[in-house]
Structures are given as C-alpha cells and as structure tokens.
Amino acid sequence: MDETSVSAAAAGAAAGAGDGTPRAGRGRSFEELVAEGAAVPTEGWDFSWFEGRADEGRPSWGYARTAAGRLAAATAALDIQTGGGEVFDFALGAAAPARPVLLAATEGWPPNVAKATALLRPRGAVVVASPEDAPLPFADETFDLVLSRHPVRPHWDEIARVLVPGGAYVAQHVGPASVFELVEYFLGPQPERIRGSRHPDHESAGAERAGLEIVDLRAERLRMEFHDIAAVVHFLRKVVWIVPGFTVAAYEPRLRALHERIEAEGSFVAHSTRHLFDARKPDR
Image 1 (cartoon, one colour):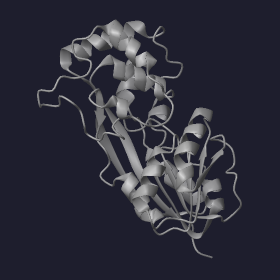
Image 2 (image 1 turned 60 degrees about the vertical axis):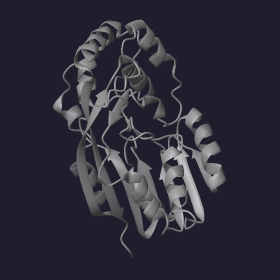
Image 3 (image 1 turned 120 degrees about the vertical axis):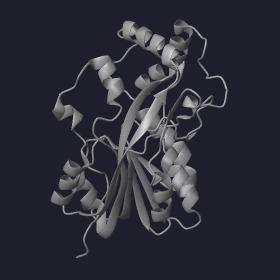
Image 4 (image 1 turned 180 degrees about the horizontal axis):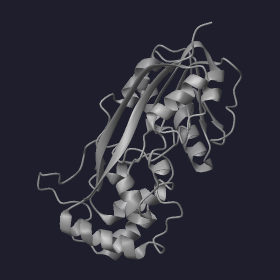
C-alpha cells in the first residue's frame, strides 16, 4: 500500500469549501490540534476522519467502480495488499450478486489483517497474512483477476504466475513524486531518483518483462488540501512512508510553522499522482 486518498470514504466532502461552513480545526490552538491528530487510531484504510479536514481529487476512472465491473465478470479474484479491506469490500458489494466464486486477499500488517478478515469474511473472501515482499501464497494459475489499490510495489513475476492465461491485473498505483510538497516540507529537496521512482513507464517495463501485456495505462495528478495541522499529523502517522520515522516531538518546530501557515492561508496544498494499470496475461 502507499499514501491513499484522504477522501476515500468522503469523496470531495470538504466542510467549509466555499459554503461558509467552519473547518473542523479553525480557531483551535496548535497544541489541541496536534494532540487530536496524534490520538486518532491508524488501523485500516478508512479515511472518513479526514472529512472537513483534508480532501483530495479522485481519478476520473473511479477505481472502485472499475474493480466492481471486473469482479462481476470474474470467477476467481485476488486483492493484493488489501489494507483493511475497505475498497475490496466496496467493490464486492457493488458487483453483487455476480461476483467470483473464489475470493482471496493478502495483507502484511497484523492490525489490518484482523480488520480485513472481519470485513471480508461475510463476503466469502479469505484474508491471508502475507508480507508485502514475500511470494504470493497461492498456486500457479489460480486467479483470472488480480486487483490492488496502492501496492508498495508490484511484484510482477508473482502476479503473472498466479494469473491464468487470459487473466487480468487491474490496479491503481501511486505515481512519482506523490504528495512531495509535504515530503519536501519536512525532509527537504529529494534526489531525482527518489522523485522519479514509481513512474508508470518503469512499471510498465517491469510488467512486460514478466510476460504481461499492457492493455490500458492512464495517469493523473490530483490536488490535495490539508485544512488543519491535526490532519497533517494524522496523515503522517497513518501513511508512515511519507516522512519515515515521523513523530510529533521530532518535527514540532516544522509542525508549528506549518500550523501558522495553514491558519494564514487556509490550507496546505499538495498533489498526489495516480495511474491505472490494466494488464493481461497472454493466452497460451
């Protein structure tokens, strides 16, 4: 998984966005807001807490709807790095009653394994605890559809191995330099090799080396806004790879300066990058 949409559960619902509604953190002290952001649980990928505090544009292709459409036509499906299972659960619900007979998901973080199991078991899906960098714990040619939303990195050889001939990999990936306005605010300028990692051209080449054919590849850059410092703190605690080793104590001066900036300007603006992969394993 990687940094995910802060508006996944409340798309575009930014309270006070030009309608006169007060922002959640407006007028509260730095100390109050930081304490709140530091106390919110981080398990799973439910981002509804951010409603009114942060928002992000969503890609035009609508990943969950796209996944639901593909699930409706599949017989055996796997969701890789499912997080808390929220997006897979939504897609399965939207695909019902036509959905695969065999359903499985993998997840590497123990709190998310438990959360995803509780959410997906009623859908008939088994959740397998599997580290992100481990081989997929399934036999060759098991699935005709493999899904993933924001994997840390795609293991193309493993994806190709578990797909049946003619099967598809449909996924939304995080793109290059995503949310780097926030990354570089805390960490300073990053080298080009870091900024350019996750480029869709590089990932396409990896997929093709594994024997997959790229059917469709789309990319978009999307506006994000953080409306109070509590949202920044919670985001950095939840999405730990944005600022590795982040703690409030370690970054208190930068957080305080950012709080003052948000109070003066109304928000902190960043941009996420996303790309949609539709790849196919050739028929024999």
